[in-house]
Image (cartoon, rainbow, N blue to C red; front, side):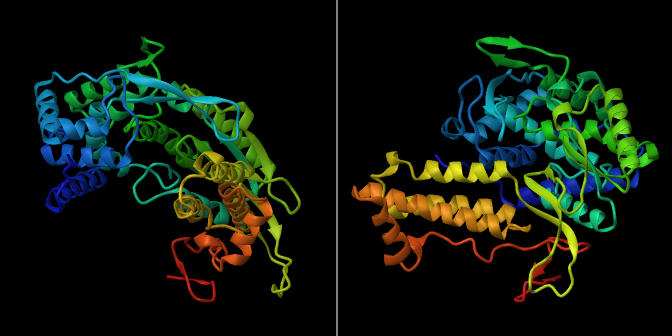
Length: 455
């Protein structure tokens, strides 16, 4: 049975609710909202929440119920039950299922907590209602998991501020942030804007649900587990205290925070040292700490080391191309070594011997889908050389795949892909996709035919 999608009218009603909450919160920064719980179990909100959960997919929780199981059971039936349980106060979340996944570019593993589909719907509904209230307070230095903000907005700040002379960088992230946020202090942060005791009770229930690992349920007084729908919002609510302290003058330099990953841009080493000291003190007051292995001060100079932030390596370089009339120094960015290796690993997976019975066009289609997504993210940078490397690697992997499929020498595959086929068997090219960032020009400005950006 296919899942019903929220109608345009229902979507509009939820948007109207969110806009109303946002405007009310923005107009009165001291207001505490006392009547939000009835919005959480509103049918249009639950339907929008279900739509978001279904679209994001994901594995089953400890009850082993999948998205497909919910559709077979009946979405309307499940939402009616959730609305009834929430309204009567009998709703109780299940513990999340704990799994460990590899950290990209590292031998470490990070914990991921997977709530059941039912609980994900409730978390998504609570997020729909709470997010506009807190979004009205969040500061411009925060970019992660926020509406109409993203990675490239944060990276534009690095371009702009380094151009203005802030080239001493404090690079850090918060150690085990999602696992160490104290529950009581997180709820207190929510209470600064929300006085609805039913919403606060629901939030406490979510936080205290615990995780199941190896058949045992563990409860903790800290953490908003990664994998929960509402966890990024809750982390931002708590880390908003860091942003406010920085804005109030306790920190120096320009803070750029993407949830628990952050940099501070400063003009001098002394300023950077003060910034790192202030960061450490403020985080300690919040019960958090910078991760020692990822915390350092870097000076962006030509020929010096760079900074890895949000999937890109950032280095100060000088344009020495023949086309440049003047040698201009600027902050260049391109995919990190880890990002490049992950791309090669994925292309290798898509062309493994186990797929030799598939039609070549199916394999090319899968490779193209990956390349479009990867390039769509990394194209906003100085990534032409890296794009050429990945394009060459994709062609090489496809050539090997063709040779294996026909039981021929690799040279045969290279001939088929590179010579016999005018378009490399339909494999897309990444050539010409790169859009170089410019200081004080939004990355959202579209480039014109000459490569320059226009509004």
